[in-house]
Image (cartoon, rainbow, N blue to C red; front, side, top):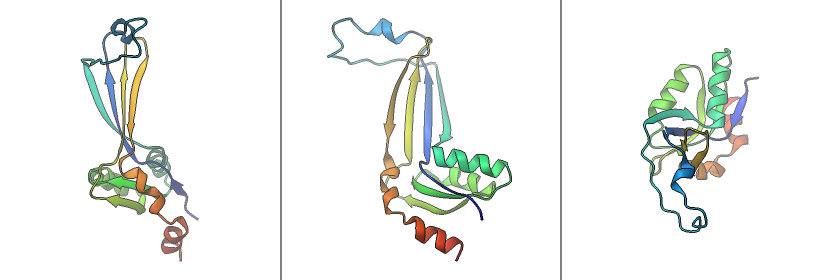
Length: 138
């Protein structure tokens, strides 16, 4: 029996800020925050717990079934996973929304300001795991 991996499929946008966040906040004024940080590095990574686990299992020679929801921008990511042997028959692709995304800005002290966009992941509840598994292994 092949492994079934359920969970998130996402993109990670990782940024590096060359200063310290704390230098941009005024003590006693944290109730009124409006800041912008000029970053010197931006990396786009393919992520999501389920997609990462499926990728790692494929590296070990397994042929996992990935179950999750992705958006209209999933095409190249999905093709790469498939080329490694990941079964995408359990992935629901929603063409009218983007794939979930994590945005993290890290300062030189290792502090982070992060945001998460749920995107297509909000539709994962529409996936019937018993149906997906039955269709795959009748």
